[in-house]
Amino acid sequence: MFWTKYHAHRRPFIVKGAVTESAAMNWTDQYIMDHFGDEVAKVEWRNEDRLTDYCGQQIRGKYIHCPQDTIPYVESRTSIRNFIQKSQKDPSWAKYIISQMPDAMGKDWKVPGFFNCGKRFEGDRMKGKPWMTQMYENNFWYLRVPPEKMGTSTIHYDMNHQVMCMFAGKKEWIMWDLRTESQKVPMWNEYYRAPSQGKPQGSDDSPIDGERVDLKRWPEFGSARWRNTTIEKGDCLYLPAHLLHYVRSWSDDPEDHRIIALMTMFQSEESYDPSYCKDVPSHSYLSDYDVMWGEFPGSMEVPRCMNHVKMGYPNWKRMLAKLAKKEVGEKAFVKFWAKEGYPKKRVKAAWQRFVSDVASETMTWAEKVFNSTALTNLAKDVACGMEGHEGPERKLREGESWDARNEYSLAGDYKGYTDEKHEEL
Image 1 (cartoon, rainbow, N blue to C red):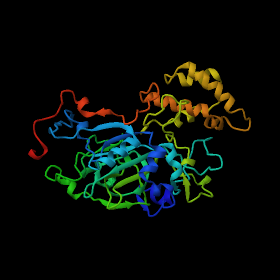
Image 2 (image 1 turned 135 degrees about the horizontal axis):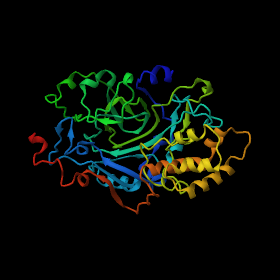
Image 3 (image 1 turned 45 degrees about the vertical axis):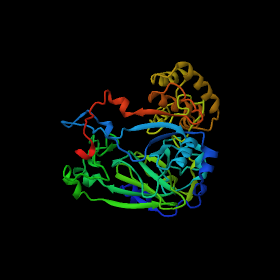
Image 4 (image 1 turned 90 degrees about the vertical axis):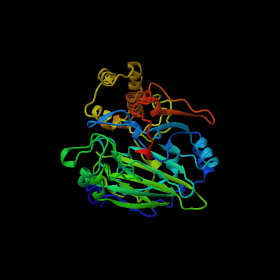
């Protein structure tokens, strides 16, 4: 039903009480710090504003200026423990965690199985669980908001299908279907394409502030059709790729001001394959899935990926799928990976490990490729190299934080900033 009724028509839905049997329902701050506290997390402002991505640019013939009180986009790194301790001491601290989910959290999350039965590459079926859909990435949200306050997103759409489940607090989702409303909602980059015109060129944001909508500037937005829903502790939401949305996060629990959510996602290219859709359980631990970018912080077996927050990274299984089409020897193997700019010495070492990995004569060449730990590690490392990583990210010292990106530093003499303030515009 999921693939034909909801996925095919890009229809979102809620599963009430879907994760009430997950251990994460009982997470305390102390438990999170004890079990996952050392891991690094990406931190942003809890009220998102991506205006500073565009300061000083010419967009569709208009110069984008930023009032002097514009909050810059700042992306920081700190440990989960340090973040929680700081938010406990100062609940007004206006930051939140939006980061790649640490591996170890997967054993505490029993995800609903409605999204299974996805098509896989030839040779890439999970042994004993051929019904498993190829999941792409897992994320972790944590914020603490004072009473009467909330966290907010930008109005945006994402490129992947998402399954978000709540373990504390609430999230309201306001959604617009761009297949019918795209002419009424301005977008910064106009990447969206209707299904009849192909795929969107990438994710995109709207310049509209979800809490202060300027209908004088964008009058058409007032007639855009929308829907909304709220998910609370124990619920899960399926959000289709390319569905425009705005999210408010808050807690009305006087004893717990936290908002905690976990998300897993699969890419828009995934499709239904009924041939393996048998004996699918209603729930499975997320740790049972071979999530493409599920390894965090990772290991030194994949040095370029180790400890980097990997969100939106390349689909490395596509490289394995190309290699799996035709059996090759060592020379062609080295040539295949070397063209990606990967050191030949490492490629040759991976070949030797690959040969010992898959000595079985009963497996097809494609099965050997996808079942080799050496090749999956190699493909991931190549993909992380494509993202500019040459080695592992260091572990943070106790209490340390640092800015990975700051729009003030990118602006160059505050390009595009003016002496005006928002209330003067």
